[in-house]
Amino acid sequence: MADKKYVPRHIRYHKGGQQDVFPIKLKDFNMMTRLCLVKRDAARERGDLKGEHRWWRNSIILITGANTGHRIERLLQFTPRNIEGGPLAIEEFKTGK
Image (cartoon, rainbow, N blue to C red):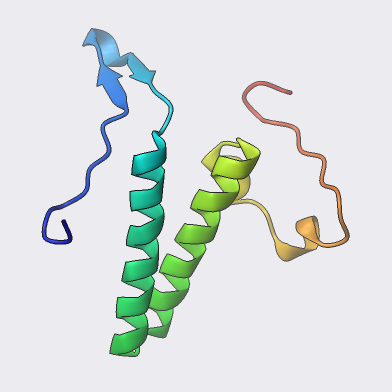
């Protein structure tokens, strides 16, 4: 399975640019998480510190996004200062919730 390129299919496109987005299946989530960790380990073996950091960050964003249910643009704005000290209150930009 490692030889095949993994492409999750969770978006259906319509005319006019409209899209239907479907929930990620557990099998696909596990595969994406595994892919991030494999890429991280490969970067570590090459001695590529930036690549290792990038894939470590990608796996953390993937897991955090799945657990919190927030959009990616909100997760990318987090800093350690936002998260330290316990509970975190977040207001979504798009929905205001």
